[in-house]
Length: 278
Image (cartoon, rainbow, N blue to C red; front, side, top):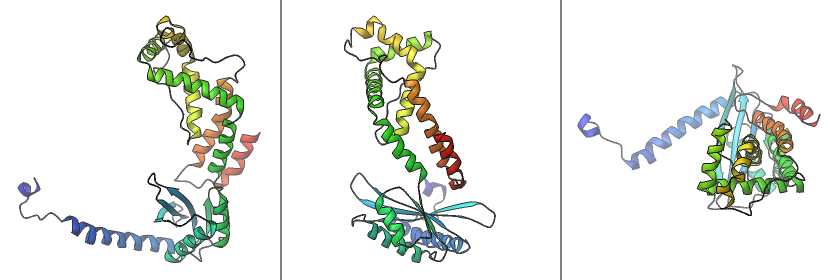
């Protein structure tokens, strides 16, 4: 098609793109980022290690600073493979190399990481001025512990089983939609939780609470009962769904607020913490 539109145009080869165009673009971008970092008075870094499903391990370092126009600027400085063990000493070496490579060792650096002990050691060994533990990660740890409380875990298990039943049974799902229309409820699908995301447990319970009248009506219908006689239901002895949702909701909202990318959030940690506790 390109040849028809403009016969004189020569399409770049894959080799030209990978060996000339992309390296040139990388060099230009790198120079721009280094110049931008050089103009910053202070630079804050975030660092995290992660692993692909193929078990390849990487470490990503991101820089944040406020420019002369009082705008928050963020650059992903590097994502490098780290086949060696993610010990504090090895991570510290990665951080030291990054500071030197990007010319920010003298920028009065602050680093934000999760609560892992290896990150604490790395920040100390790399001699950062200040090490801040990620508040969103702290909330995640607290929420994960809350979800393991026996009464809450039992409730989650029962709700999860009911939700999965409606997701796999076409008869039950059809009856649920019918009851939603009859009760004039939003025709939302039920949600299930994901082990790695505690917020999903809140979302599952919140949606279950919204649709509980339709769920109960559908479960009591003869069409559903004859296909699943042993399906568990919630009992009066269970901690109520509303109680768990009302407890988790402020934590979810706080996590979302702390996940902002365009504005600094460190200054709101103390008031948010006070609000959650009191």
